[in-house]
Length: 301
Length: 293
Image (cartoon, rainbow over all chains, first blue to last red; front, side):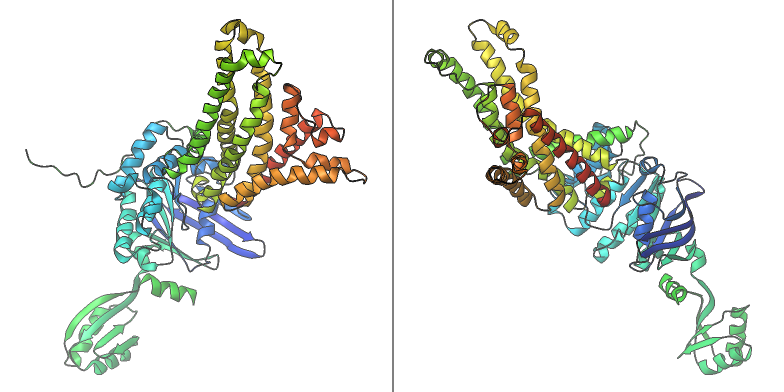
């Protein structure tokens, strides 16, 4: 499902708000699929999303979204995009069904079809029974679902989700992440911005890291988490095992019976041999992985 | 038969027509009408606008009834009953209240609730958004002025001694005098309330500011205009609410001498003030929303 190739291409993008440079000489290609945009508050995530929507224009550089330039063809871009803002952005005096139907009409869908799609989409995000209630009476979780519904009601090619799980309790957060995961199956590509890295790890297959308006890293999530190390737990003589491995020129971090070994070549073989020589035994041995947070903090440093 | 439960209806792609920017503009227009009239909102949002609409319609029927009941008597003693021109005075009071409510309702909630960030992520420009809002405003407020006048016109035709069609033929000028006069009221008041509505974040405060401006400007301007300093007479033009009334007097029968007339200005000065106010509103509100988008 979904398209192949890239959905966003950015080259030399700089955007400043007067003296504050929000994005600095950014080169970026975002492939089809679910892409996470991570960075601390102020990293430039929301500015990048607003540039992609054509709401603000680059000070320098070029941007293409789904093959269109948002600066010169903003309406063309926006007709193919859905956007879920981070900030409170719902009319409290309208029912969810009315509001979502209205946003479908804003995307050009005729009123009758807009109503039908509104009901279907609210059903999809889990607001079937509540869709005729006023949004002002909704909980934070329900409001986030309405915001997601309006972003996809017009069947966009790409949705930009800005902190979609913001303010949700753990259960609500999981449900929202599950909905986002499902979007790709509907043929909708996703760029989801978040500063909660575990959310990105759970939902995305490509990650873009921003810090201070510059690109730290952009790549598939699979390639991000391999550290080249092996985590091992031994039965006894952990100090001796560690010493033998160090004698082979391998880095070892020991904490009681647990060792992190490497990176290096043929680590598993070296560990097994060292354990045998030390007359110990292996409890477990796994390839080391780093969380996105470890990587992000490492890149920042 | 076993009970069937649908847990997930999935997602349906859409291959139907898309109306693009014009569809978006129409959607904003329809939403504006619904918002002003409280449609799709809780009951309390309907009370104020529909009360005023009912009063306006009932008043039109009462006017026709008066003409029917005592029209001949009033004519025989040389006292004409209020008709098209005078009706504007009555309806301008209702419409002022309606405008004070409708203008802020059209602009402020979208802005203060942050909904603009969603609207402008659709194929909708600031100009389209504002044009549709103005259209909704003009439709409702124009309706407040025109529908009762149409009822009056048809009612007077029905009770006319010369017959319905003969009356309509004799009074065909009403068909352009009434809309032109209404346009004066709607344009001036609309310009003021849109400027205030784009600046103030609370609908109640914007309504109070609008009514206060209309009320206070007249009194202050007419007093300052009487002062003896160079250019004092131009201050009389700041009594804003007089201008559509001066146009009304030109269209129908002249009833009052307004400060601007007393200061030597004719009806074209009033037309100019209204045009300037409208242009100022276009420039100001457009610039403000371009910053917000």
